Image 1 (spheres, rainbow, N blue to C red):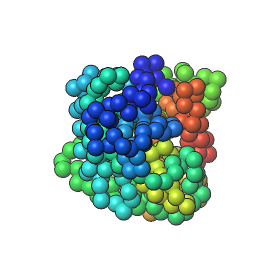
Image 2 (image 1 turned 90 degrees about the vertical axis):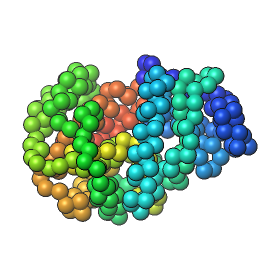
Image 3 (image 1 turned 60 degrees about the vertical axis):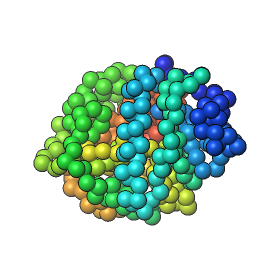
Image 4 (image 1 turned 45 degrees about the vertical axis):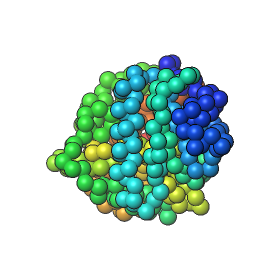
Length: 295
């Protein structure tokens, strides 16, 4: 998916686990097919998941990121009734893999890209409940750190220009440029930052029987624009459940439109970047843009 992507063979994972965590030597290790773009995932037995970052970083930077990810993941534990992974261990670089890696608990369920909950009103209520619970976590005085999604929409102008240029022939770029010209100037007002999961896309949402069964990749949990997690409404829901979701969250027009804009930013990047390397992610971006255009 990335030009600098690290290859992670299952045999390498087996050897690293056996050497660093001998208590798991008896557990089978198998690769997990995933549309994830950050980590290669391996199931260790029935209850654990080993996660290996795909893009190279120096060891110290990677270790700091994994420690921060684990801290954020722990901060979400028990704050809603929906299961989230529990950090278990941090692995070290070794033969065949040059960076630290992590182990979390495995959550049962099917990702929303495989079991579409878009027409489920019960799922829409669950998603609103999860977001409300995350927003209730104390920011402890922290604010948006200044990189990625969740701050000022206008700081994404350069990225959006690249996305528009790369999307010629894939999307109706003139129309999308006009939409962004409006979205980038949406007012924020005095709304304080609140806690957000930050990446409520289908691959991070587990579904069972049309209900929310769990949330993955909580390592990005942090303070940001209250509208950021509203991206889930556009990535995951069709119009009827989306209206119900909005009522349950209780946001005003300005916040709702900013959530739509953050989903737009994410979707524009996904379509062209992953069109060959991760078609599921590319299709997600196209579907989200279609929902945004139709709204």
